[in-house]
Length: 232
Image 1 (cartoon, rainbow, N blue to C red):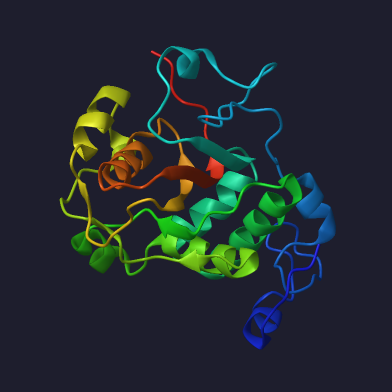
Image 2 (tube, rainbow, N blue to C red):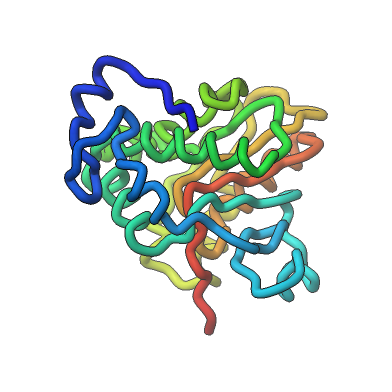
C-alpha cells in the first residue's frame, strides 16, 4: 500500500497509535494495520456482516433508499478506539489515518467510484460546539486518495437534532426526518455519502433520501466502520 505523507504527519506519527512501536507516516505499524477488523462478507445494500449470500433478510424485504453500502471496518476493538479518539477526543490526525485506510481498502476491493463524495453534514450549532465534522475530516484524505471531488456544500443539515446514540431505532428515524436539505444541483449525479460509523443507518438514509429527492441518480454509502445494528 502507498500511504503518502506530509512533514506534519511524519512528525506527529513517530509511534504507532495502537502499540507504540516506531512507525511510518500512516500512524499505524504494519502489524497493527494487518490486525484491524477489515470487513469480510457483508450485505451489499446495508453492509451488515453476513455468513453467506450478498443480501441480508432486511434488505430483501425492505431495501434501503441508498443503492449500496460499504463498511471498511467492523466497529469493534481496536477500530472503535481509533474512531472514538477522532470523534470524542478531537484528535484529527486519526482522520487522516482512517481516511487513507478507507481509500486503500476501497481501491483494493475495486469499488465503483462516484463523481463526488458528500460527507454527512453537521448542524451549524453542533459544528460550533465540536469544532469539526468528523465525516468531513475523514472525507478529505479519502477523496484525495481516490482522486474524487469532495462536495461539502450540496447537502446541509437544516434542523438540529438530539444525539442519535441516546435514542432507540424508532426514535432515531423520527429524530432525523427532514433534517437535511440539498441546496445545489445533484440532478443525475452519482455520489457517495461518507460517515464515520453506521449503526441503524437512520441518519445516512435521511441524507440519501434528500439527495434522491433532489434528483441524484445513484447514491452509495461509504462508512469507516459498520456497527452491528441493535435487535429488539
